[in-house]
Amino acid sequence: MAEKPFHIVLVEPEIPPNTGSIARLCGATDTVLDLVRPLGFSTDDKHLKRAGLDYWPYVDIRFWENLDAFLAAQDERRLRFFTTKVDRLYYEAQFRPGDYLIFGKETKGLPEEILALYRDRCYTVPMSNNHIRSLNLAMSAGIVLYEGLRQIRIKHP
Image 1 (tube, rainbow, N blue to C red):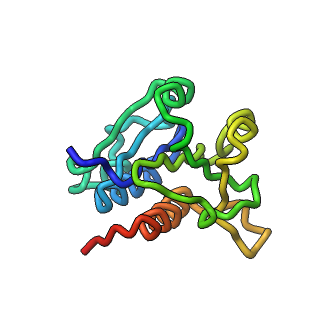
Image 2: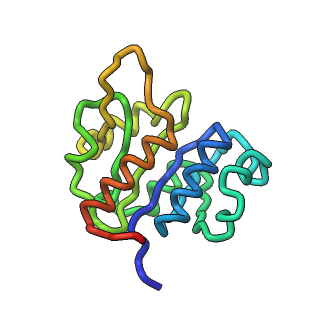
């Protein structure tokens, strides 16, 4: 089986429609969706399935018991973390096929200790209006994923 272009990793996602929209994005781009527990919802949740609906069976979803288990199983060189708490822009990342694009929970983002440990691999999606706390998780994931796809020059019909 060929390597998937990317993995989108959601660490402790809380809002079912966000995860459903990201699942649909992953299905459309042949990207793996890694969900790190605890989840703020059941993956059987009707809102989650409604957002992905007929695409749900075509999404490669992998579950992890916690962030430590996920990180222990990965090659650190493939990890890219996304947060509002750094100034390095997402398009400055040098993406390679198989990279893990990691996003934190909607209300708190990624844990501070993870951001400190992987500071050299943290990026942000910039915003011009400082009155807005952050972009929607699904929107941020889409922006970053398509930049990665652009960099590795995968074309989708």
